[in-house]
Length: 143
Image (cartoon, rainbow, N blue to C red; front, side, top):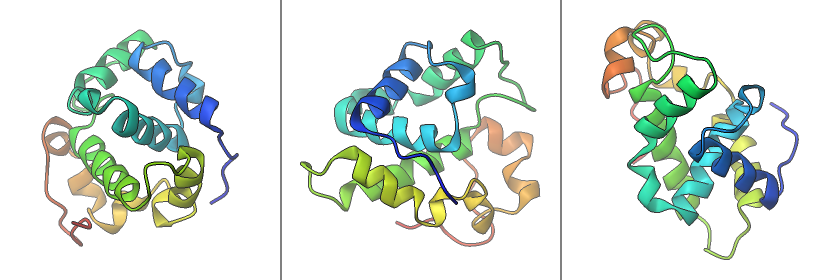
């Protein structure tokens, strides 16, 4: 999958826009999810645990809702943060996030359907997985 490369400033703008609930909804793309996760894990690790509330607040601020059918999704958020943390840990601290993000997006995780390699569609998109962490039913996530 091809993504427009993001530089350090764009990654920071996406992450701080998410944290302040001011990022335009049209910019909240698959690439932006991982950009924000990497930036937060590196620059604001204290905010990583607050991601559920950050995303719920962002959803409402951009006109969305958080319900059993839309908005915040616990399993997707935790899985994505886990992948981002694992990916980030594979690089030295001085490596630019733009390089790390580009490599992540060039991997199988760059596909917007990457989660379906681990979860069946029914399990992942059910209300239970939206409300709480649900273990993969196809293949485990990387440790």
